[in-house]
Image 1 (cartoon, rainbow, N blue to C red):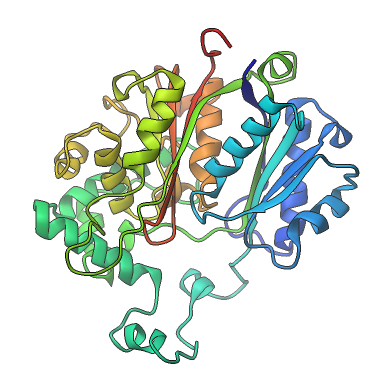
Image 2: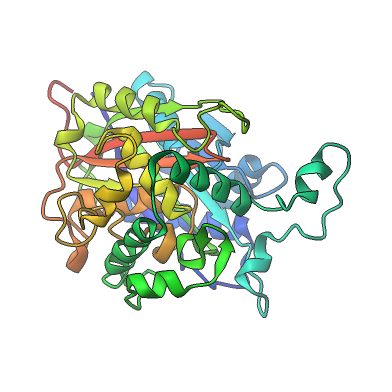
Length: 387
C-alpha cells in the first residue's frame, strides 16, 4: 500500500483578474478531480493552504458542496506548505482515516492597473516598538532579508552575482518551452546583470514573479490511483526541516537551510540517494534559494552551488534538470505548488518539449518564511518496491 497523486488542477495563472482566491481554489479542486476522473463527492478530505482569509477550509468545502469530510484542515508552513500538505494527505490515506484528499493553494495579490511590486507592498504599514527598528534600517520587505542571506553566503564562500545569474538564465530557458509560463523570452547573463537592483546583491531577475491563480492536487492510495484517468505519481518519501536560525552574528542564517534535514529524511524513506535523482523542482523565490537548496541536498559541496550552477548543470541538456517549467522566477508563483505541479507533469511524462530525459525519481522542495521552513517530497511514476 502506498500513496499517490492522482489529479492535478491548475487555473489560469498570472495576470488573472475578477476571481477571489476562494473561487480560484474551488476551480482548481474541480479541475483536479476531473483530471483524475473523479466526482467531487468522491473527496473525503480537504487541505487548504493559508492565505484565503476567514475559515478557508469550511468555506471552500461549502462552495464545493463537500459534506461529511473525514479530514479538513488549514496548513501553513508558508512556501513549504504544499509539501507538508501532500505528506499529511499521504499519511492520512495510508492510515485509512480518509481515502481521497484534495490539497489546494490559491492567491490573487495582483490588481488591475497596479504594478506587481505593489502586490505585497507594506511601505505604508505603521511600525511600532522593536518592529520599527528593522524598518528604520530599511528592512521593510522579505527581499531585504533574502538579500542579507545572499550576502552572507557570498562573504563566506565567494559566491558571485554572475553565478546567481546562471540560475536565472537556465530557469528562463526551461520557461521558453512551457506554454503556462508568464515569462517566455530568453535572457542572457548580460540581461541579468543589467536588470535593476531590488536589494543588492539581488537583481530583478534574481526575484520571483507575482501571480494570481490556484493549483490543487488529489492524493489517494496507489492501488486506486492506478485505476484512474491519469498516470499515478507515487509519493515515495517526505520530510520537513525547520532550522530556527536567528538572524544574528554567529548563526547559520544564509549558510544552511532545512533542506539539510528534510532531504535526507525524504530520501531515506524513499530508499534513494541524490545520485538517483533525475529531476529537481526546487522552490526558487530567489536564485539564491535554488543555490543553497542544491548544496543542502548534497548535489554539490557546501559553498560550491555557484560553480555548479555556472557549469550548465541545471538547464536544458544539463546533468540535473532543475525547475523545468520555469519555476517561480519565470513560470508562475504559486508558493510550493509551483515546483509540485511541474514535478507531477514531469513524473507523468507530460512535459512535452521540456520533458526531462529521465523521470524515475523527482525531488520537490518547498521553502517557507525567511529560510525558516523546508519540505521535501520524492515522487516517481513507479511504486516503491514492496508497497
